[in-house]
Length: 218
Image 1 (cartoon, rainbow, N blue to C red):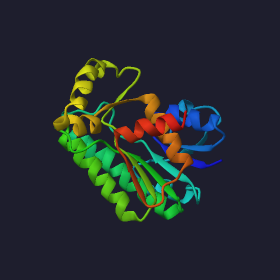
Image 2 (cartoon, rainbow, N blue to C red):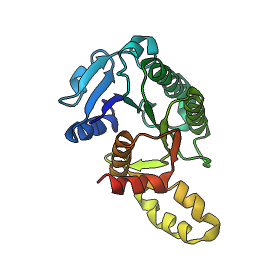
Image 3 (cartoon, rainbow, N blue to C red):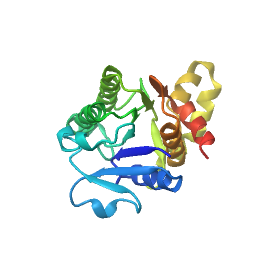
């Protein structure tokens, strides 16, 4: 049984992860804004705080816990570069500060595959987030998906045949695998695996590894 603190626990991925971890017997604490308490999954402890300000929650971090950081700008697009800095980057800075202060033993971060031909501002912010984690001295698991298929996010399935073809060509195989598609189920299983198997040092997991971890945590 692990103590897991989730930022973004009322979101698309966080709410699903919280429910799954609870079902597996883990103690889960959701960090939420005031007024969002009703969106937290049942049996999940609630910590009302501002994830963009570590001072509001760092003293309530459970020593020895794993923090899973899932806060980010909804529906990222090139037009949201300012939000990436104000929300994505600031939130990871504050979450890392809270983790270090509170004695967390493991930090899980959903980054993004890179290098990649698009979404440069988003990738730059996520890369900086990774650098902040590395500089902190925390043990961390960094997951690097490219696009996560799931409810409301199915349109890239039309690209699957092109990915399969690219994977068969030596010149494009590595890039196609690094920028491959994963499902929400793959991500949830990989996140569960990360919570249940804390990294020692920094473990970076690319798309093929995310799919593999998903199989292990079924």
